[in-house]
Each structure stands twice: as structure tokens, then as C-alpha cells.
Image (cartoon, rainbow, N blue to C red; front, side, top):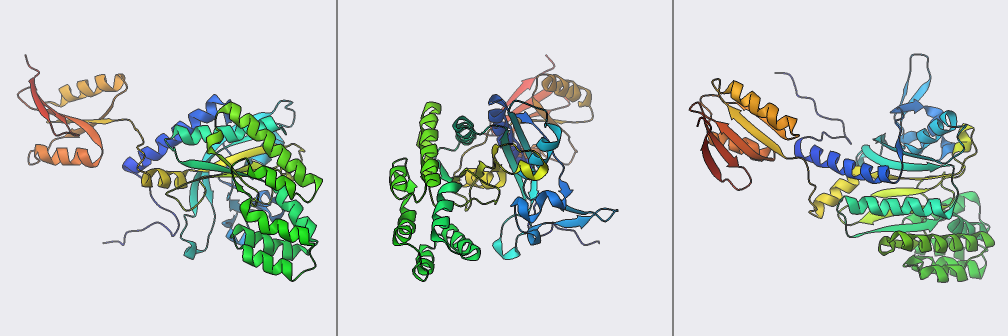
Length: 414
């Protein structure tokens, strides 16, 4: 007997009810993107290495899945879909005058270290608004995130918003070396503010800037914290960033989503190409953000088109984990079973055709002589079927509710 093959580390099979729930969640999210006017786009699962080169700012080269084509070109499985959209937009839509609203669904691949315990293949659904640099565009994206998460049943979640210019202004005001700033960025990402203070205390950093970094952990919460952030803003760029966030918040109140909005001025962009607002959505039941997004006004320049843009990606697998742990039901299409014999096959097929023509999902099972009714009822419950029609040779039908176990016998021959 041959040894059975399993999936590689970091990937998994999804099937039956779990797969149905995932596809339904994707359908619900896609409906929100559609009603906001976003059009679907599909890009290749693998691209030339240059699309994700270091200067693009996605992830390090060592975490890419790399391989070669027959001509020796280096190809990679996409770790992030936004650069692919940017490449496509720069080449396919360069003559378009109006903003492009694009949405997508696809898998991303990141070769994490095994000890991190995360999936290496993730399904993402996202939206990109290309060609618009405005408060209105930023607010639209944030409102769409909130509406999408509410659409799939989440109630307890927050969208944290920050601004690259604010945290960068603090960094620039330290006058530290590039590698030292990178270390502080990492410490802030890990919420290690003691480490930040230790570095600043050992450097010739102005006292007001040290105090600003000391207050930074407190700049996380409702809209009121923006006033505090404005008081310690070290530059005009930082003040503009706070003003921008305040204006976005006013628009978000018009969308009616403000209860799910918080601010985090210490937030670093997870990708190097972010240039303006950055945001992440969190809920309980998962250890990571369920949505990541931000503005990337210079990304398309890397592909030859100077166009401002903003986008987000919903990490579907993280979202499914949260929905499961919060016990939020996902309504999927109901399956009905027809169990028949050789003598009732013609009758069964006619019934199935009639049900399917009306849009009902029907699974047919030909009954073996040795199998009992309870055998098929057990199978139906395992596959989440809700009812079973048990056709007998004497033209009676056992109509069984698999949710309650109730059965009603009717005579179809009369």
C-alpha cells in the first residue's frame, strides 16, 4: 500500500462545511465591494521577481517562494496582491482619466519560519482605489471595511487608523542614523517602549522629542487623542497628518461607522510602500489583524505611472477564525438528500430535476440493500443536509427533517 501524501507545512485543505462557509463569507464581502462600485480584476498567481523586489517594500526576499522559468527568469509566488494590481493598473489603464475602483480575491504565499505557526498560503480579498488622493477616497475605503465586516456578522471590532507622516516626523526629529530608526520602528511595532526610551536616552535627542515618544503609547483610542497628538506634533507634516485624520473622522460620521473607528498614532505600516493613512481592523478570536490597508501614493511610480492610490486586504483565513471562535453563524445554501432504489430511480431523477430547476440544492444517493435509513440520516447530518426524501418501492416517501429527526410518511401513489 502506497504511503498517503499530506500537505506541506503551512498549507491546508478546506472542504465540506468549512469551505461552504468560507465561500459564503467571500460572497458577502464581495457584495459590499460591488455596491460601492468596485470592478473585479484577476492578476497572475506568480510574477517576475522585480514586481516584489526590495524597493517595492512588501517583504524580504528570503520569505518569497522563488523559482525559474525555462528562460532562466526568476519568478515568485505573490506574497501580496497590491503590487500586482499596481503593475496591471500602470500598464493597462494609463489612458484612464477617472479613478479606478478595483477589487480582487486570491491567494498569497509567504514562506514564514516554521516556528511562527502561521499559514503560508492565505486567501485575501481586497479593494484598490487608484487615481484619487483625497480625504473622500480615504473615508470611502474605511467605511467599506466597516460595512464589509458588519455584513459578515461581526459586531465587536475596531478599525485602528494611523498616519505614516506622523510617526515618520517623530523619527526624523531624532536625527538618528537609518539603522537606529529602523530599530526604533521595530521596538514600537512590538510595543517595547522601554527599549525605545533606552535608545533615546543614550543619544543626543531633544528633550521634547523624548517626551513625545514617551507619550506615544497613550496616543491610541477615540478621536479625542488626536488633540493630544496635535500638541506634541514635531513638524508641519505631523500637524497636517493629524488634521487629515480629523477631517476623515468627520466624513466617517456621515457614513455612520464612527463607533468602529479608533486611532493609533504609533502604528507603523506593515509594508514599506505606505505613504499616508494606514489602518488595521481587529476583533477577538484571532491573533492578527483581519484587515490591513493604507495609502500608497508612490507605488505605481515603480511601474512607470505617477498615480496616487489607496487600498486594503481582508485576510479571509483570519476572519474565518474569528467568526468561528465568536460562534457567529454563516448562513449557507441548504442541501436536501434524495435516497432512492433501482425501482425508484426514474422518480428520484424527476424530483431532483424539479427541485434543482427551482434553485434548491439536491444530493442523490442510490440506496444499497444492506444499508439502513439511519445510515443515510447519519451521513446527511455529517454533511449538514437539512432534509431527506426516502423513496420506497411501494411509492411511499419518508420525509425526514434532519435537524429535528422528525419524519412524516406520505403516499405518493395516490
